[in-house]
Length: 387
Image (cartoon, rainbow, N blue to C red; front, top):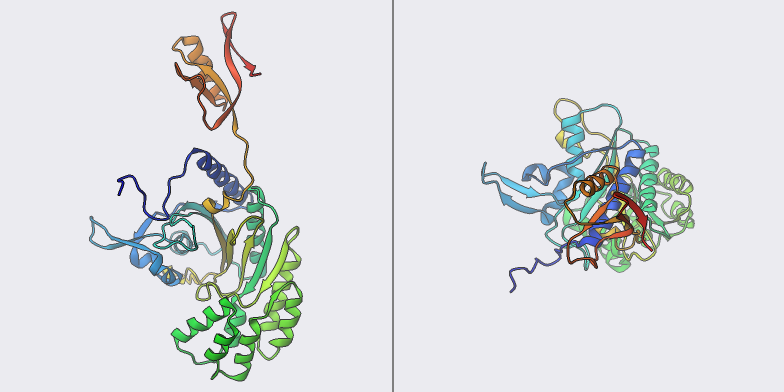
């Protein structure tokens, strides 16, 4: 085996893709800043008990673990940044008012999340803490869509669901954790026969409601069907009205509903969404409401804060985002004459990219589009267009 062979699902990012990813990162963080979100930078590693506390418990199998050579304590390499941002909001900032935070950094997974996915996503996301109303849901979803438009990607569609529907159907049903997991897996797979088997001894309303969810996906008509099918379940009508309210305020995108989508059932507490685009085989972005995410990090204050957010992988996004033109640059001869060096330095101070052609490399190829050149004319250095 070659010493230079990288681990499975780990890859170098070469100049063209790296340039595109970095431009996307800046564009999307600027978009979040335009909404009033503050940038935070959590560490790549933390004590394991901190990373896997609260909602982070579900990340145990995805987290690389190691021993700190300084303290002897177990450390983890983050598999998701959201629990860390919740810790920052709850324990370090401790604000009572609304807090809007955004982030971008690598995470590491023990297993790829889907075929051909990287185990080292570059995760970008945004979270809003402190508001339990649907206004925050709409804001975070609007920001998510604006981020994808800024990429840009086209043919956006939003798939909406709500964790409270399944929870309402299961309220009061005594079921062991293993079977509960199987129920959610059957819902996600839309496996009606398996779901019927698993819920055979459930109360009639719960059993029939869960089995009805398997067919409740599609356009806005699904909400009317759901209201009839789940009319005996307390609280479902309000949830469906909330989904309709959100959908009516999403302009320029296709909206669908999948009320059986149970992914993240142990994590999400309310409305949740996935955003798709033309040319993307899987969702480019996922998010939703996860109230109480910071409760385990509280100190003296009650930090069971409402929260809603989203995240995406820039490495996945760059594969479907429209190509960006190369950055315009100025080609200059190499030389150590004071006048030439001063001219190059002045151009770079102005924000120009100046590529000095080293001796013997006049035909170099790189990630810049040299549309101008620096030439000497009459003892002065001047810029002229190429071609």
